Length: 309
Image 1 (cartoon, one colour):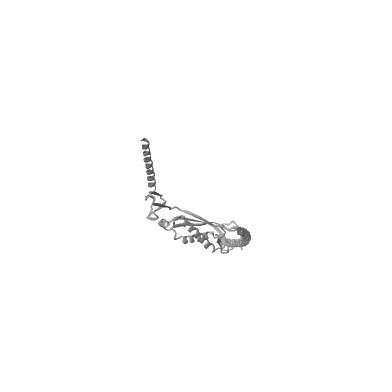
Image 2: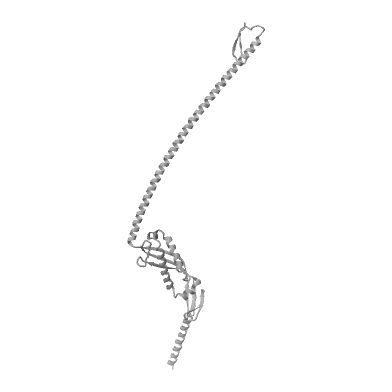
């Protein structure tokens, strides 16, 4: 009796446990959480339903439905092409390899296309690889291998533009395409080093020539400066001589003027003296000749003899 009861209880417990587990599995498979940086699409028995799902808790039928989630965050797809058969051929028939990195993100407005047209990311990445290879070969064929080194920015821009054009129908947004590395044969690498050395020698020779030319120009300028200085000194000497001659002429003219003034003053003084003598004689006149005598000229202290008949 007890054995039968225990068996029944065990069956009940097992049944309940199975139901609980099944319920838990069913519940866990009937809800999904979409993160803020994700978008979701519900697929039921292979059919897409309800459009794009926004972030949050989403309920769906367990086992027959699934939520495919797509992260809206930048991704980097990097592909390397070797120097061999996959390499690109330059304008001068040199084979080069390269490493190209593509930065992209899912286009939120075309999430449904990812589900309906592409099974998974691998198909999109495969398309990127093919288009990167095609864009790289197309662009590289326009340049020589030397130009690849000298015009990397321009070539990278052209590859990026070609990628945008080739991938425009895919549900992604490409933000950047970068050629991170070029690769070529060891023989050409050796040629590059030799060419770089020759260019360095040429640049050094040009620099030395420029230095010599600059020094020569400096000497010419110094000679011109000395010549100008000598001309200025000569002009200064001439100006000083002219100045001294003019100064001497002015001094001579002044001396001559002074002598003329002195002579004129002496003539005036003598005339004054004669006048005063005549006046003195006139004072002494009494109708007959005044006897010769001496008298002092007024105001001068000079002694003047007077004669009488």
